[in-house]
Image 1 (cartoon, rainbow over the protein chains, first blue to last red):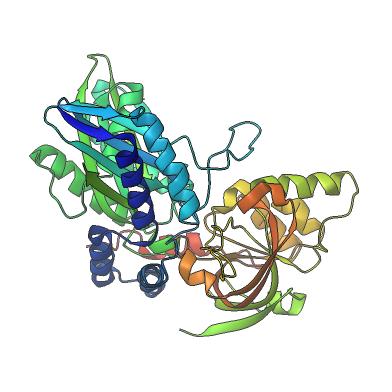
Image 2 (cartoon, each protein chain N blue to C red):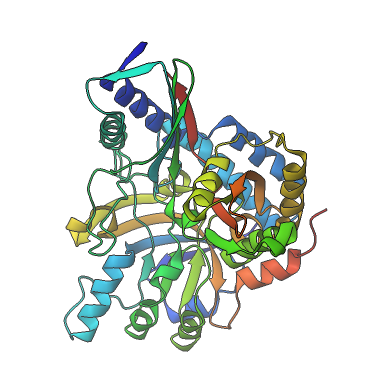
Length: 279
Length: 186
């Protein structure tokens, strides 16, 4: 049995939050650099250059890449040989979130959905747990902005809609989103599960590094098709016109009910702040 | 790329010279407001009460900045998505608002109001909050402090970078850009 303490977890969360806020992950930075070679629109290139410049300033001045420092989203893998002492893991992640957002001068963006009153400390974090074998605790974090989240969609499709239906739904979602979710975007797609599960796996798909290939050949092909179709919409960087509307498409599928084919499309902005830590 | 340098608040002459796609650098005084501040401003108008600032000729920037660190003027300060303010923007233009800075598409009603009241909608680069903050020289909360990042702030800006999206002639950069590059990805 491996003992991991409440404080170890909250301190790890503080580190993750602080680093992600002002350091664009390498996979995203590389992808944005590559997109400069793909983009043919002058205004699109100008936007991409400013986004790259913004990342330099954020890193050098330790300033948030974006003022929307997101809701704190976590995917946590807990090994069966891990024992957590000193409090619950949910409390420790929330404490890390509270302290991390305060210490980093990050924006607190959680509020009551009806009164709109700000909670004041960016809690509660959104946490998804998975129980795995082993003696490790893996915490993956993303600062998920509201603008791209607002353009995300879920659809309970018919089995007869098939792969084409899913491709059309994803492309239509990006057509409707247009300039709003800060393109170039990353698209996470969850196929299967049930209503809520499809959305969770769509979010999880965003955590895969850009540039990695889906091990499922059929899904890899669907990703490629959606990538091409979305970049042919014409939206371009920040919607000013261009061919770089999406940097990557990532799909996860899971079994679903024989009557259903749920599909969720979770859009992420170019300021794709994510990171992980293993305790 | 050529930039048009313009001053805020805006005059009708300046607005008449702005066309969809123009890259501008804005200097002067602008105000910040998001969802809740917009709801409150329009409520004041309907109740015939004075607004916390004189809106005539002004530009409102849709932004909720991250907190300033000690010694900083402002934290990260890029635009938020504009459509959430569509419900409120036409009445503000009717009462003298001349410019809006945000990101993303506007409703037909907003685009019509831009034409009717001779105003302008600028797009700024979402997710470039650290870069944009460099053009903000002072920041002061003037109303609704309890809204935290959503309070109304008076900003002094110098060469704030933006692009004209909707002009008084009915132009829309998003529509034009999209139709120009649709089907062009190899």
